[in-house]
Length: 459
Image 1: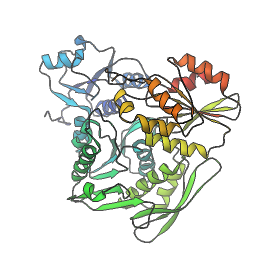
Image 2 (image 1 turned 120 degrees about the horizontal axis):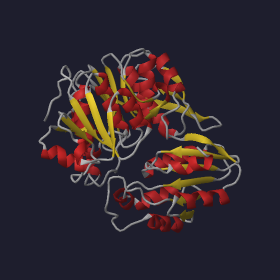
Image 3 (image 1 turned 90 degrees about the vertical axis):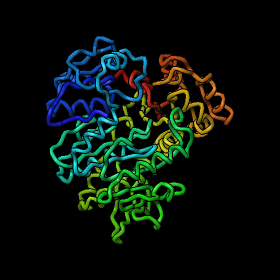
Image 4 (image 1 turned 180 degrees about the vertical axis):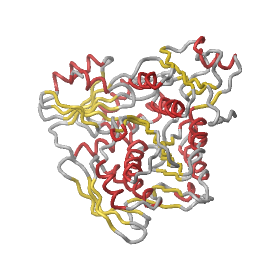
């Protein structure tokens, strides 16, 4: 594998530079004096920001974008072998690294590197942990999988030994990392276009836990099934969290305010208790905050400022993000694209003031939709009205013989009102004709379904 010498900056080209993680890595290299170029399929705020920072940005991926002065090419798991820039780099025998391999090499430069992993909740937990690091004046470098208001984007470049990043399991990316502290929020079946089954996924999380050194720590959800399989042979101290007093960090006395924001009593290993007030919705965020506060305590941070930091965290964009109102209809956007995430969001939404609950859901990838079809139907049926968009293909080209119509049929079988339209414009017309004042409308999915709400709001 090519090893970057950070004392000798070179020209690095990113295939897919506009991605939330790739753009952050490009920014870090630019700050370190590297020459950066990259391509993406469309302009965005992220590509414009990189251009302003000094990167050369190509819109469209072409063979000729790989120029003679490039020393290293970085690409994501979404890049296919037939990509013209990938092929050009191979033809010219250029060194190549995956996004995860580059991120792993960056982590080696920081004594206190933190990786937040789990099937769900990585971005929100990373946001909470980032707020804590910022409140403690650690001057951290942060790489978040969403836009965080506290840093005005998805990346913050610090000048200390603190580095925090999300750690995604897809294609075993997180096994290329070098964290000192690791968090595992939960482990469920997902990314089944790569993993064989849940046992395969659990094995990868076990390998991730084994990466942690003796002078680090693993913070893990104690409610994960057969936890000992994940923690077996782990070299570092292990700290658990959950809703039972059998765990190191646990929550009791959970209540909700009128907007669905939870509060609870935090119990720590030393027998201390603290009141926690959250500004994000849902029981899933109780777990996320427990992980963030357990991390703070593990890092020997004072608990009071850590609690204040978690209290003021409103989460990242696209996490039950209230976008606005139209005709007294509240429009919310949420990134949920897995049945467990959908259930968590809709459970939280039940505590949010509303007359009727509408969900516009855009399934993400054919493989996930097919593998979890019944679970998707069960989760979405928690809403009173469901409107389905076409499946967002993302990295896939094979439809596997399914469409959103198949999901609609499963939802209708469960007695839930469900409609399917091929275009966003048809969805928008239908919603304008059928939503009523006092209703809540959630656009949901990991694709571009947020455009429906934004069009309705005239944004």
